[in-house]
Length: 209
Image (cartoon, rainbow, N blue to C red; front, top):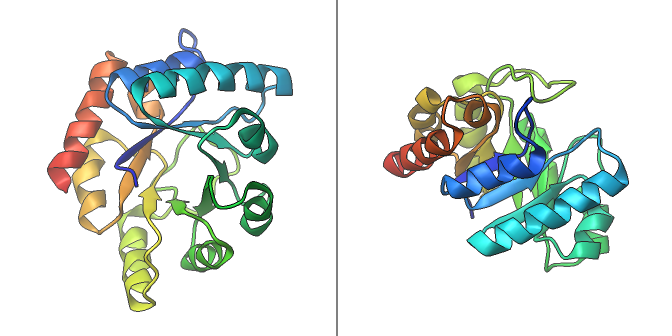
């Protein structure tokens, strides 16, 4: 389903839509628009911009949290955090034609999301990250190893994406435990050359498969 996801963020010189453009130029083909503190007007305007960019690049466009906006503008899907709308309810509202992802920190979260009809899991955090408030307990490599083993034991095959403070040097080790992909944000935007850094993440992921 995905190899590398990019989650939008901003810096003093990079806007949310700019960050999506950087990721797309760097070869990423899965963008999640995450704007937790934005007004509904600002979110919709940015969503329309980022959706158009994603269409130009043939990329999947996911919006964080806002199920009704996803349906209204025809985005590819929604990602739901632990405090957002339940996945089961989102599936009832969106039907089967939209992608629904869910945030997980434990195997129990994953089992529940799979049962409720999620299409993929964003599982983390790998390590501490400043791009997200109210962080769940850190998983680290050992946490992913345990989760992947339990998923295999219970024959749960939902795609899992590792997330949270992942750097370029982490990619090979994380992919080696059997996750399906990684999500990045700050490591790309804070690089000296963000587009080139995105390219490096894409290459590192493909080299690990």
